[in-house]
Length: 468
Ligand code: TAP
Image 1 (spheres, protein in one colour):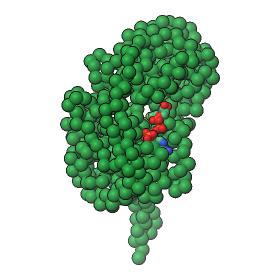
Image 2: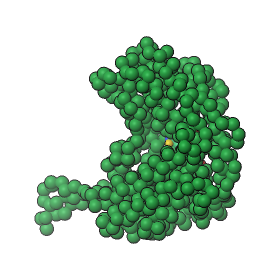
Image 3: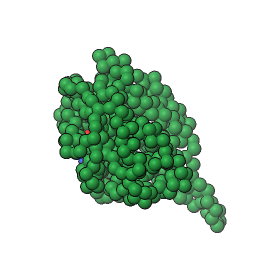
């Protein structure tokens, strides 16, 4: 399926104007999407509350069957969803297909929950004590532009499985797949208004999720700065909150590994999605005695990357999301000492060549800031203690990798690095059946895995007297 034969999903919102969407591959505007006003957001939240009251009482087996039907619809439309993401976000086609499949997988995983999210029976004198997992009500999910499909699914699938209704705000620039997913939910038979996508500005739509008392939880992924504001806003109502924020993760490479193999794997850990990934290992720490060897082996692995049309076979990296974001990334690169770069097409698309930077010290912005683009900074370290100290010298703590053949050292370093998701001798970070989230200013709470359901429900304790 190509952009030419795609039917674009629309929205009924528009009292606050419209947002023009640009194809990041060409820089050309291709459609407009309506922006909701605060009154339209409030009306959606009220419809969601009514849907929640009905959904709460739907039999667990029926809820499970509907979530599985939704997953099946997503799978059936994976090519269409992926084509929308290539058009709207510039994602490489293979990645976009994985992202659509991830939504289906997450839905199927949490479709197992309604019949299994059991409480406890706790021994007490004089009666019986039991606990229930009660849904929260309406959950507001706020999604960034970097992974529009997976991050939406990580919020709505467990929220719906736990018995809640969802209002979802996609990033203003990448609403298309979220809108299509909401249509597919309806086609699968999910009740009307149970999953609503509300398009528009963060300062209007997202802010109403924070302020409206019927929204009982906000699930936010995005920048640390906006996350801080949302946390402050939620405090007024002690509103439940999950935050997935930025990262500046380290890839730590010790001298006892196959250096060529570690260098060949490193670009995939940072340049995936053109570096627009909160888990990107954008700092590489290499043991001093293999530092030069690593840098030499990294160069061909970076320069061979193909940057170009995301729909094309053999493309490794697509464009960045907007002209503004491209300009921010290129400014960082211009201000850094660059060892070597790959190549990127010219023209009007938002392409940036992948680059390897030599930080001038630990205060160099290229070492410290989340650039969110295809650039990685490499620094040497002397020993295990210094590697841990440098890895932890950041306000973030989301992800990271440790390469060593020494199992004791691997575990010591993994325990020492302040980060929520670490891989040893690999770069994997996110599996939908394991917990995902950040330490320090990378976030609050955990998504995915078996425990996510608990963050979309409250525990209620009930004592039944047997004495009366
Ligand atoms: P944000 O501005 O944080 O946007 C994320 C989401 O929050 C979007 O849906 C946005 O809506 C919404 N939002 C903005 N202001 C809001 C407010 N006052 N109340 C409620 N919601 C609000 O991130 P961004 O502009 O997409 O990216 C900026 C930087 O954040 C990136 O360069 C990167 O460093 C970081 N980032 C991190 C992640 C992850 S996964 N951790 C993802 C994306 C970006 P609008 O789209 O309408 O603004």
